[in-house]
Every structure is written in C-alpha cells, then in structure tokens.
Length: 441
Image 1 (cartoon, rainbow, N blue to C red):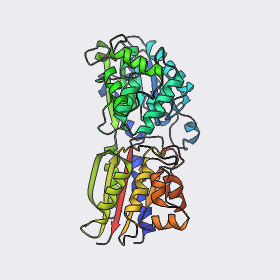
Image 2 (cartoon, rainbow, N blue to C red; image 1 turned 135 degrees about the horizontal axis):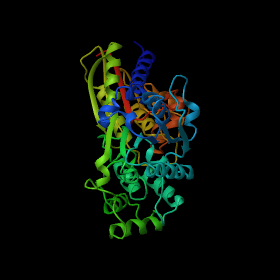
Image 3 (tube, helix red, strand yellow; image 1 turned 120 degrees about the horizontal axis):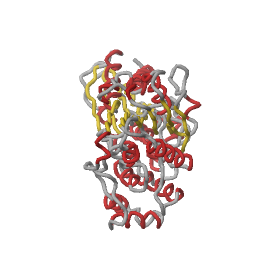
Image 4 (cartoon, helix red, strand yellow; image 1 turned 90 degrees about the vertical axis):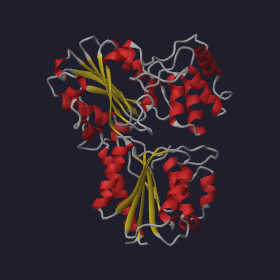
C-alpha cells in the first residue's frame, strides 16, 4: 500500500471519529425521561439555552426528540458564520433561535447571547424545564463580563491566555471568575426550575466544571485560583488593570465566590455528558479494524505541547511493530506556547513536528492530526496529514520546515506540501484525534 492510500485510510478513520460525536446521533441515544425522572411533556414550558460549536444540530435534534406537542422556545449561540455551513440532512431548529458570536475571542454578540440566556433562565418557574445544550466554544460564545470589567479588557485577557500555553482548565478558571454566567451561575438563574444540561465534552477528563466554563455545575475553583493561574503564566502584570483589580477584590472576599456544591440551586440540576473524545476514539478504532488494521494502541487524555506530541507520535510510528497494517490512536487537547508570528494551530504543529521527526524515514507511515470541530487555530484547516516525504516537499517549495515550526507557522509549510486536512466546520467538538498508520515491518 502506498502512502497516498494510507492517507486516504487515515482520513476515513478520522471522519468516522467525527461522525460518532455528532449531537443528533448522541442525543437519540439519550432517554430524556430517564434523566429527568418524568416525561418532558409534563412540564409547563421547555426553555432551551445553549452555546457551542454543536448548537445548531443539537437544538434541531432536541426539537425532534421533544416533538410538536411540547411547547419549546429559546436561543442557542454559535460562532459567526457557522449556521451557513450546516449541511443538508443535518437538523436545524425552527422554534429555537440561533444567535452568532465571536470565537475564540469574545465579541459583543456573545455578550448579548449570554444576556438572553440568563433572561430566559430567570423567566423559568418551578414547573418549567430549562435545557442547556453545551459544547466546546461555549465559554467565548457566552461572555458576560462583571461590573467594572469591560468587554475589551476581557478580550485582551482572553488573547493573552490563549497565546500563553495555559491548559484549558486554567484558562477557564480565569474565565469563570470574570463572568456573570459561567461557574454555575446559569444554574442560579434557572432555580427553582428543573435544569437539564446536555454536554459534549471537548476537554481532557470530561469535567463539566471545565467544559464551556461550567455554567450549570458547582465551581470548585476560587478567585485565588484564577489569580494563581495568571501568576504562574507570568501574565499578572500584562492583563488590564480592571481585571487585576476585580480578581484581587474577589480574593479579598469583597465579591461573592462562584457557587459551590452545597448551594440549593443545584438540587434541581442534572448534568449529562453525552459525548466525549473517548467516544470518537472508539469509533476511530472500529473503523481502523474495518479497514483491515490492527489497532496496537489507543492513548486518551493527551495534553502538553503540540510539537512534543508530534515527536512522540513519530517515534511510536517509526518504532517496532507487530508487522502488517498497524494503527495507533491518540486523543486529547494539546497546547501551543506562541513565541513566533506565524499562522497555524495545535494540530498543524503536531503534524509538522511529526513530519520533521520522520524526515527521510523509510517506513510507510502517515500521521493525521485533526480537530474534531474542523477548525484548527485561526485557519481554514482541521489539521494536517504527513508522511516521511512531507518535510522534503516543504523544502522543495522553498520553505524551511524547522524554521516554520519555530515560528508557529505550520499552516503555510503544510500547505506547500499539500498536507493540510480540510473538513470545514463539523458542528461538533470533542477535542483532537491523531491517527497513525503503518504498513510493513
């Protein structure tokens, strides 16, 4: 089998992973009555709020599950432009409004979406049901800064955090303490109504308190924790003064902490994580077997620097195997500490680092690293798919692959080698999947 055929199989395996975590397919496996302890049509009203990259098909599928006899209203937020990319055959809501906002850096539209979500939740009575549809990207799409912190200051803080390489747990710890909706505050707004949160996880560990900054669950972190994140990243002196002042006031007890597990608002809340990176990896492994590969390893929970993972994946794929056609899989979410001025994303860095590590290797190997949301950094690519010939192709195009990696400029390097993976928005998000394939000994 040549490397082009291997690359096609890697793409088939990645696509199978993405299909398995589409919100409609996952939602149809859920019994809402079991989660609620009563039929949904016994509530006076069903109010739907939501934020994230999966919101459009998520809301459309929920409408289908509830049927026409249940009165439904609400609004969900998605990144700007996403509604125009929903393919035919994927459900769209007709009763739930779709709002567009900024991602990953918040915009005024996201502030309005968060304001609308809180207003809907607060309008719920004790005999109403509030359903929150939460998926990756929700933190930016539901942005509602506290008094004293402007949206521009929150945007500046977000940019600093995203460029720093701070893991998402730390980023969202800060976000939760600079928000009027995150960190369990949506649950406060909905009480005493019944609140059901249906969640697609895009974070390692699948902790609902981290996913979309945990709007429906108790927050185990504090203002002091948020300050510690900035201190550890060397960002305290770089964030706007209003942010420092607000977090300092919270640490001193002048501002109430986010609600903890003992708060009565959570007595009527059910949070169900219905799709994860593990779901995607299982589907990828099944597709690999269907295509004739022996799956020699599946590593979940991958974190750390993207380029380090790329080198590790390359080493694993170039090392000893059992022979025949072999597949190895990795899943999780890496980070990129941005030191250069280039263009790319974490999956493109994984791919370019792997290409350099495999440079001139004789093994028939391909490595595909892709974001299940179809969007890797501020680019139109989901990631990259490389072989031992990729680095040479980049050089043939007049680029130095090592220099491009050092400058966080993986996109043009991979583009020069025709090694970008483009899927378009997939309308889901369970972090990243890396597929390694090898044939022969």
